[in-house]
Length: 96
Image (cartoon, rainbow, N blue to C red; front, top):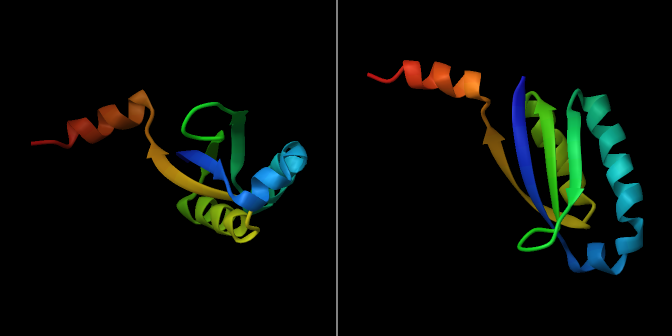
């Protein structure tokens, strides 16, 4: 199961409706679950990004969840594929 870290910013629409953000996060969790994507954490942050979301699942489930969420117009995201210590050790072992 792949891990994804999404760095999220609110759009103008999203920040205008900031009071709905916790409800939108709950809706995202439900939608992601139906797609087979497990939401590990949703954190509201200060700094360059407004939220950090950590999920686990298939590439296809992650992409479907992100496209669905982005199409609603409240957020824009940058998503990173993350690797555990065990996964990166396996990758490193393949190096010549």
